[in-house]
Every structure is written in structure tokens, then in C-alpha cells.
Length: 311
Image (cartoon, rainbow, N blue to C red; front, side, top):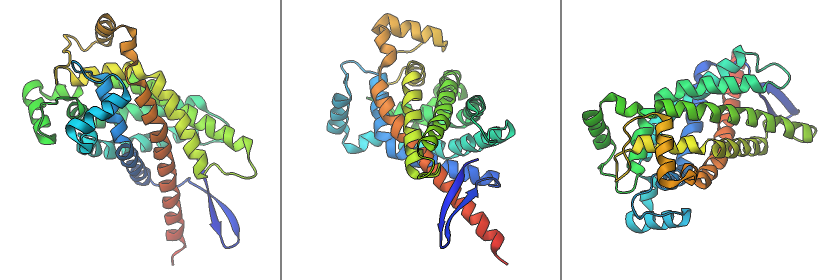
């Protein structure tokens, strides 16, 4: 597992993250997830508006931004932030703790490079965390849509439950898993690989715990994974927002059916809608998330060491 470099009175001491408790991984993940999503939420709102276009709506990032600020004010960029926070905290707690557990069980903490283990651990993490996050993600997306008919969080939850039942909250779960599994596999494998390369480039002057390492590796991983999985993200967003604010409603939640209808109506470019704001979201979001997560882990490691040294 990652080593922390702590500055002390007698130089630099390398401290292993091994020994962190499961709940500490959960808390670190929860802090990282909430920090990431709150910081990047306006970009996420722009992505949703571009992926679920209403009649005559904006077709560029600049137009979408101007439209939201003009018609809804700056706070319009944060419409749906409450359900996001309610879902992101526990979901990221599950996400990172399951990743760390699987990585440890599969030997990913041993010396050497283990891209398959990192990818597989990431897939296991996303399957578990998406079960927690998807309902709140559905609510968030519907509140973000232009001309959303919902008055707020409680009204949206109540109407989905009354009109669609519990399955309405999980209409996109299969698509979310199929999107996030490759996303997470690419994300974690790229993150660990880039971090390893950076360590090899300057082994004498930098440690893998340096903030710049995590920011760079996280940004590269988020950007690549975000762009590669944009078509599936478009499908997921359309399924979550169908019938809302004039959005198309689908007779089947089959991914193939949704893709076919999008291509028929908008061409193949319809499947790439929002790729720029998606990349602009995931690059800095992953950088923020990973650096926050690693900093939280280091803090817990210091706390555990100080606790052991107390009489």
C-alpha cells in the first residue's frame, strides 16, 4: 500500500498505510467523494444539460452556462447538489473501502505493478458503491434537467416513488454498472500506472505521497476514463431523465434500444454529447478526490501511530 513521507525533526520517515482500519478507509473515501462532487458540481450540471437537450436548448458549454445563469441565477448550477451529497458520502465510503479490501486480498499491495488487480478491485468497488449511489443520482439528474418539474429533493423522491415505484430509482442501474465498470477499470489502472511512472522519473526527489503525484495521476486517469465511457454515460443520463422536461421516454431500458433511438434521431454524435464537460469534470474531480483521499489516509496513519505511542 502507499507509503507516506512525514517530515520530522530528524529527517524524513517512511510510514506504511498498512494497518488502517476498515472504517478509516470508509471515512477517508467519504470525505474525498463529497469534496470532489461539491467542487465540480457546476460542470456536472452543464454535462447533464448537454446530454439531455430540451427543444431549442443550448448546444455548447458556453451557451448552456449563459442560459442557466440568466434564467436560474448562479444557484441554478447547484440544483440537485443536496441529493448528490447524500449519495456521494456513503457511496464513496463503500467505493474506496471495497477497493482497498479487494486490492489487499488479491495481492495488489505487494511490490511490483498489478494493473489487472487494480482494475478488478475497481470494478468490485463500483458494483458495490453504485447500489448505494444510483437512487440519489437519479434524483440529482432529474433536478438538473432544464425545465425540471420537481420543486426539490423531497418532491422528486415522492413523485418518483408514486409514479414509478422503487424501480424508478434503479432504471439506469444496469447501464450505470456497465458504464462504471470499464470507467473504474481504466481509472484505477491508469492512476496506479501514471503514479508509478512519475515515481520512476524522479525517484530521488519525489515520493508517491507528494501532492503533485496524486493530482497528476488522478487527472490523467479521470480524463481518459471519462472520455472513453461518454457514450454509456449519455445512455445512463437519458434513462434517468426520460419523460422529464420534454425528454424522450423509452419503451425499453435496453442499452441497445436507447443507443439505436439516439443514433436514429441525432446521429452518432448524439452519443458523444457532453464529452468535453465530462472530461473537464473527471480530470480535476479525480485529482481532487485522490489527493484528498490519500491525505486523509495519511492523517489516519499518523493518528494510529500517535495512539500506539500513548501510555
